[in-house]
Every structure is written in C-alpha cells, then in structure tokens.
Length: 114
Length: 113
Image 1: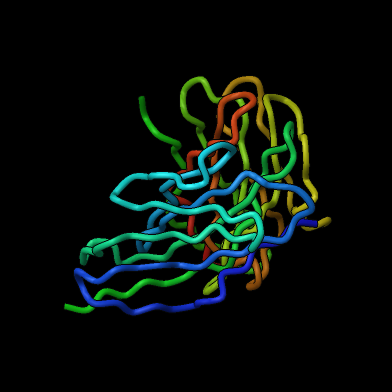
Image 2: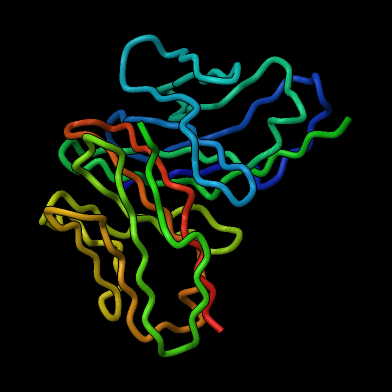
C-alpha cells in the first residue's frame, strides 16, 4: 500500500524568507501527487497537483513543487512567505484510476514570525 | 457554483447517541469521499461513494459506521452509538467523474461527551 511521509511536524520561518516543506511517498509506480493547505478550523484547499509531464509545477498563492522520481519526493516551495501562509500543509497521493481516494501525510504546521 | 457543503459544522453528542453528518457535493460532481481527521493527525480515508453505490469502504470501521449517497439528496455518514473515540473532524470531498481533483467541504466537528 502507498504511504506518505512528511518528516517535519512543525516549521517556523520569518516573513519574507523562503520555504520548503518536504514530502516523500512510497509506491511502486509514480502516483498522482497533491499539496493541500488547511487554515485553522477550515477545510482543505488544493494548492497544486502533479500528474505527469514537467516535474516543476506551479500552484496558487505563489507556491510551486518539484517531483523527483529518484528521491520519491514532492517538496513544496515558496520563495517568500507571507504571514497569511501560516497554516497546516498536507501532502497526498492517489494511485488507482477508478478509485481516486487520497492517502495523506500527517501534515506540517507552518508558523510565520515577523 | 457553490462549493461542497457540510452540515452541521459542529455536532455534540452524548455517548450512545447517533450522529448524522451530511454532505452536498458540488454541482455536477457524482463522486463523494469521506475522511476523518483525529486531533493532531492527518486525514484518513473512510469511504468512497458514487450515486447509489459504495465503491470503497475499506477505511470505515466495521461496526457502527455507515454511509450512503442516494440518487437524490446529500450523502450521509451515520455513526451509531457514538463513543468518545469518534470525536474528530469529518471531511467530505467531491469530484466529477474520472478526476483526481477533490474539492473539500469545511468539515463537521463531532464532539462526543
């Protein structure tokens, strides 16, 4: 069965600094990859996705992610964070066409300091 | 186009009562997924439904939990005889056919006292 690992439970960065959130997956083939963001008390919003093609994908709110097959990774990046980026970030994978259920990582909580 | 709607947003039940959580998918979406988020944890898949069919319920506890998505009306997640361990946030997501893009509702936060 597939699994997703987000090794960083909590990350703190200064406003304006760059950000990288790590995500590794375990699956025999290339899964479909997603990053979601969850603000406190809210549902999840899709930031970006990777299905195939260009391994660097652009998302909303200035986020991007790079798929690296050799490392089984799909890390999320942002060049300059804003205070409004403080939230919980989840990496997820889907593997079966016809049953698109998502397997989520445990999440990374992002705190922004002035 | 309204997003995925869930109600109630907050639900308090005493141990032994029943909880009914409702999910109205986005217009045109015929696939519904339910996920559970325990405190300080990620989301765990529970069940995947299409209209009038349960496609995958591998994440559902074998007892007390059931789900349906009737031809008309919202999808319902039903928890009978709730226990404290059922306290969690329950999220519904919907997608159009043959799509990996799921759109999430705001969740129902269930508290069992």
